[in-house]
Image 1 (cartoon, rainbow, N blue to C red):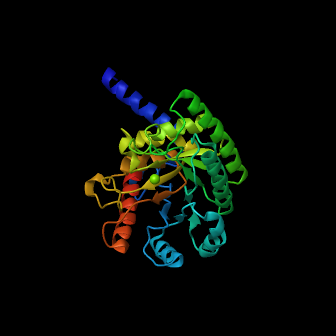
Image 2: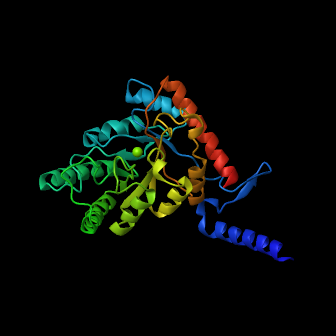
Image 3: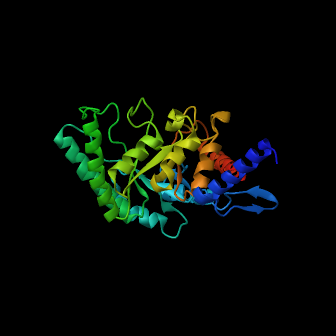
Length: 309
Ligand code: MG
C-alpha cells in the first residue's frame, strides 16, 4: 500500500469510527432497498404554531394538521394558564402533542427595574407551570431584546447574573416536568445571543438540566454553518427548532432555492434529535396550498439528508 492509499484508508477508517462513536442518530446505520442510508430511523416531528394552519377554530386547525401528519402544536404562552383545559380537550384523541410554548410572559429577565424583573418572574413561572401540565418540551425565551430598556449592562457580571437566574428558573421548570429554552436571534434583535452556540454555552453555564437552547432557521442566517450550529448544541442542549423560508420568513419553499435545510437536517439526524421542528413564519399566498407544499418540501429534504449523512 502506498502512502496515498494508506492515508485514504486511514481517513475512512477514522471517520467510520467517529461516526459510530459520536453520532447516536446514525448508530443504527442500515441500507434500505439497496440504497445506503445512515439516519433512516430518525423521524421528522413537524409542529405548527397556532397561526400556521388554516381554519377558524382550534379544532379546524388541528384537523388540518392531523391530515398532514403534523404531530406537534406550539401555542403562545400568553394566557396559557387559562387555556390548559381547552388545549388538553382539543388534543384529546389526536396524534398531536404540545411541542414547545412560545414566550408570552411580561417583563424580561435582564430588566434593571426590579418591578419589570418581578413581572417576568411571576408570569414566566405561571407559564412554566402550565407548560408542565401540558407536557411541553419547554418554554421559549429571550433574556432581553435589543430594544428592551432599561437593561442591565452587557458585562461579564451580567452574564454571571443571567446564568444564576437561569439556574433557578431551570430548576423550577424541571420540578414542573419541563424546561426553559433560550432562543438565539439575529444581531438586529439580540446582539449578544446570535448563534446557537451562544445560547448553548449560556445553557451549559446555567448548570441546570432545565435550561436548553433552540435553533431557528430564520435567525440562523447568522451562522456560518447550519450543520455546525446544531452540532454545537448537541443532543444535550438542543430542545427545539423553528422553521421559516430563508429570505422573507414565510412558508418554507416560498423563497425557492434559498430554502435549503439539508445541512441542518443532517446534523439533527446525526444527533438523533427527537424533539420538534416547528413552523414560525408568515404566508405569502393561499395558506392551505403553501403550508402543504412546505411540509412536503421538509419531508423531501429530510429524506435527502438521511440519504447522504
Ligand atoms: Mg423563532
